[in-house]
Length: 225
Image (tube, rainbow, N blue to C red):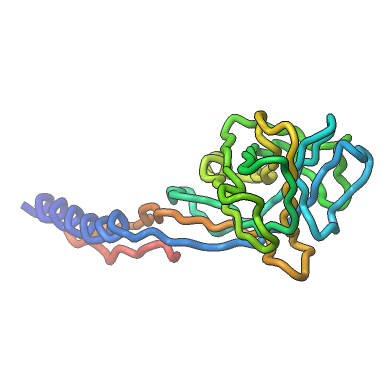
């Protein structure tokens, strides 16, 4: 009978401890860019890490790519589920023969430095979790227009790898864009909103410890948030 009571007590405490975690509501946090630059085939050996504008363009046989990285270390636990992640960017300048244009995102697979990386030394890139965002649905976006670019798939991949796998995202014009340019405010821009990432996640279950003493269950202690 004593062992039956112990089992029942463990089950009761486990249920009390786990149900709140399973029913937890989603949480959201914002993180500013920790590094950004653009890479230009027009000047393949130049760096633009302190430029106020991040260019994404294609035309005349040349391209500009933007690299952005966000430091989210410590903001997500291993069991958390990423619901949505999106970058907020502010338009600084825009030029295209027709709107809208499509901006495609990919992941950087290797490290880069905003004040040292050039088009000629670009990091390795992957589009295994690429996303496409339409910019300028109402025509040429005016200066200061806010653009949200989805990076949910990428953040889920970064989070599932854990460790130092988050080397940032790359923004390029979509493959169907022949001629177009969008300039976004960088983290060095003093006049417009700087880049940030907004992450919504579902907190994972907490970890509990138990101790048995002659048929009694010790108090279950939750791991701190």
